[in-house]
Length: 112
Length: 149
Picture (cartoon, rainbow over the protein chains, first blue to last red):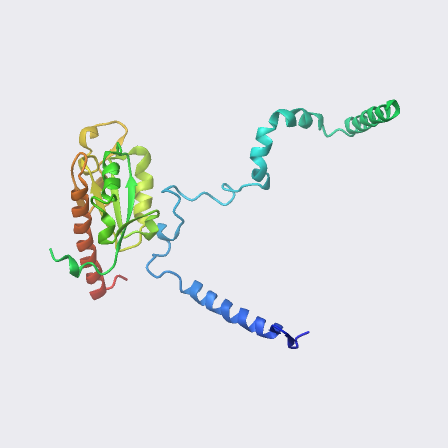
């Protein structure tokens, strides 16, 4: 598993990879921890620049996953609205829809 | 003025409009055109005060922009210079008694260089920025002698 794999175009060693990743990771962590000395701590200098506006709380600036396809649902709102209204959450309504659609499909199959 | 002494590195400028009519802003843009060309001196407009050495402020400060202006000033790393471009930012100008104004820029944040004019010509803006540059380099040198704690 950890042995050296030699091929015609080179070699592969998991241990060398782990060592290289650890070395690069250590350098990244070192640079990250040095930070920017000229910034004053606990002031606005360490806060993000949002065109001069205060930073919102994480909860206040949360975007849900449904925002990704917001434009899609907004454009097709006319078609979605009746479908959403049909979804009452009542199991009897769902059952009646299944029966109704099944009957229609069976009638279409029988007629054709 | 011996500029060479102070041209050690380029100067990054953040432009902030606190309520200008855009007259001075257009003159700043004119300063970037080949006729005046700020950038030949190493003066570069940047998109964030966090990268800036100098704040270039146009317009009087409206009620809505007082908070953002103060925040932008506080977010600019030290040492920094503030240049006010235009009569409105310098004194309020013709709008000085408007109900919607907080006043001139120096009522909100400390100002180092004033460049009055309505609108200011690009040559004046360049001159103002160079004066701020010299002040900034002197400030840096004094900070090296006596580093801030």
